[in-house]
Amino acid sequence: FQYLKRFDQGYNLDTFCYKSHSVEGNPAECLQQFLLHCGITDPSWSELRNFTWFLNVQLRDCEASDFCNPHLIQDTLQGF
Image 1 (spheres, one colour):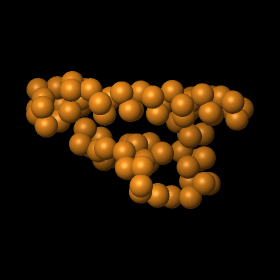
Image 2: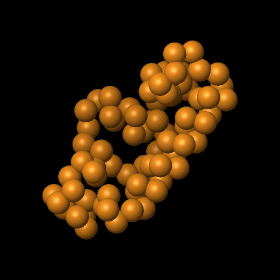
Image 3: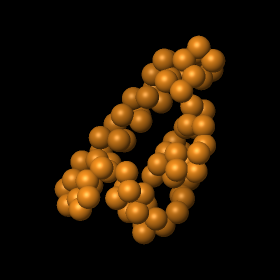
C-alpha cells in the first residue's frame, strides 16, 4: 500500500523503503489502491490476495537487491 500510494502521488520510489511499523491510511483507502492497481476489472478476494502477495514478494526482493540500492548504484541505473 505504501508503494502504491507514493507511486500515485508521483514520489521517487528509488529511495523509498517499506516501513512495517508505520501505519498509513485506512482499510478503505488500502482496498481502493489495490482495486485500482490489480489490473482486473472486478477482482475476487482471492485475486486481490494473490496480487498483494505477489507485489509484496517482488518489492521485498527489490529492496534486498544490490541492483536496486540507490546508495550502491547511485545514478547508474536510476529508476531500475
